[in-house]
Length: 156
Image (cartoon, rainbow, N blue to C red; front, side, top):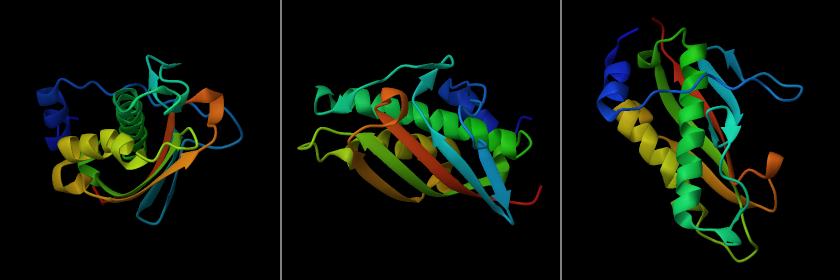
């Protein structure tokens, strides 16, 4: 497809990754009605987890922001798969983000701006969303960030 969002991705020099397969007993996404729920995505690049550890305990805001952006790219890859390759059909409704954090780390919202900024940059107005950003003691596979999303799917 070569819709508006694909053109925007090309302008930004972004190539979305292959959608990650589930690693446990769940599916990568579920649609119900016109809503698309994308399971939590990790900071994968080239199919490998690349940002591990805890923010405020070895990792800084810049690394966390990169992790969140990678999660966002993986969310978009899943959304593209669910929308039959057409990201023009999606509108982001909400992100729920988890940041592996040291007990005194309180900048989770700054970290998650990596994903929020990406969504606005790629999807435009359809990328503006509600969100939750919380700290967690640990995340699967020692990932620094995990983000899930709810999108609205428009009829083709």
